[in-house]
Length: 115
Image (spheres, rainbow, N blue to C red):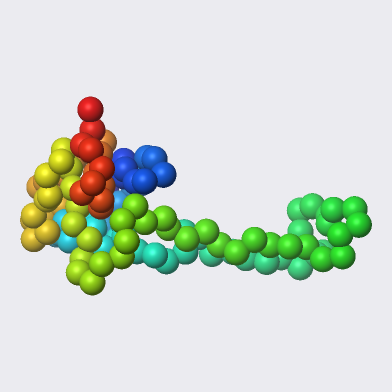
């Protein structure tokens, strides 16, 4: 299963591609969208392999920490609920039966549905 979704959050929209098992549930999609894991792994290259040199006057290269996923709502104890068109989706339903490419979803029930 591969579904392209637009996730609405407090900071705006982001397009994501969900690639998973054909029998994945909406709860699994919600858990994946609410995962606070880093978005990417930062790999530090030795100075000799870096594609660019250090800035003039810089003693050492500074690599920023990896970005973290942003939450529109505070974390909760249970699985995140996926909302579409202002309604919660059944977490037990198969994702392929209720979600379609291009759907706008959110994990925050306070956000309005798409217009």
